Amino acid sequence: MSDDSDLPSRRKPKSRRAPKARTRGQRVRRGILFTLLALVLAAGGTVYWLYSQLDGNIKSVDIDKALGDERPEKLPTAGQNLLVLGSDSRAGAENKELGGGGAVSGARSDTAMVVHIPEGRTKAVAVSIPRDTLVTRPVCSKSDGSDLPEANRVMFNSVYSLAGPACVVKTVEKMSGVRIDHYLEINFAGFKDLVDAIGGVTVDVPQDINDKASGLNLTAGPHKLNGTESLAYVRTRHGIGDGSDLGRIGLQQQFLLALLSEIKSQDLLGSPASSYKIANSATKALTTDSGLASLTSLAEFGRSMNGVDPGSMETIMLPVAYDKQDRNRVVAAEPQAGELWEAIRTDATIPESAKKSPATGG
Figure: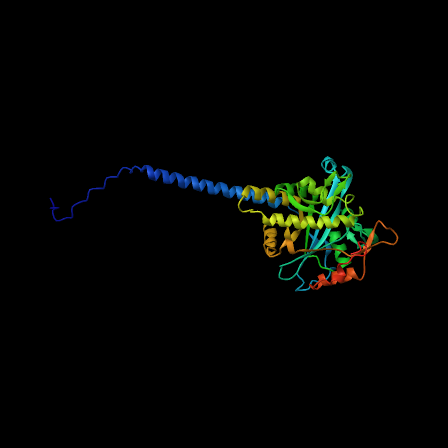
């Protein structure tokens, strides 16, 4: 029998230790960890859902595809040009309550502004085009694919209802020679909700307004307007001036600057719920060109405009004169209109002579 005394002694297998009970502190920390993880995942899903919803609110039109290559040349240092339209559908019960008619079908571009942001983006100028301006409408493609032939002496605001936003851009480019970089359309019904979402807009009413058509009654002086009142304010034409569209343009320009100032002054980061409400109302009201048709594109464009102070934005009406054949219509006044568009095309200072409109005596 062999002697095993010189062999290494066999180690006894280690006994499996019983799991060590976690302390109460460890259990609490682990619970917090899993709770935080769940909250992060839930928040991530919520943020994605909110982003998708807001992103999906924005409607778009492919201006570049619709217009092709027959467009004004874009100078490399000419800044940015936006065509901003306020589209006004007066059909339906809601618009009837707002003094919009209710029995009228279709939509018109009741407000039109070419907003020029010079190179450097520290200031801006907005040029309003009166809706009653007689223009030459170029050949345009309608939504059904058919062509709308060129026509002379058509009302500017009829172009939108006949052929849509791309034809409006084409008409503006033809009459001005200015290349439009971006298109923004604000639906007036959504505009009302946006004003309510930011808590109203304060405007300094220049004179007493008593508009029986809309029911808007305001005394001269500062007023904080809610959405319904704001919509009536930018629509009113019978309650101010000579009752024409020319008097209303001044109110629209004034309100635009007040609205931009109000949005810029609000602490949107301090109130996420309020920010979402405002963003939801704004995106529901928007139609843009395809280059701006996402939250990220709009946010990037907005950040690039941070240096523009609404208080320093210059507002001008396209110089017009009353049409000799129809005093209810106006035409671009020359040489003033030509000088204005030339200054915008070349990013030059707009001469004072180009700001005078024979129709208003200015």
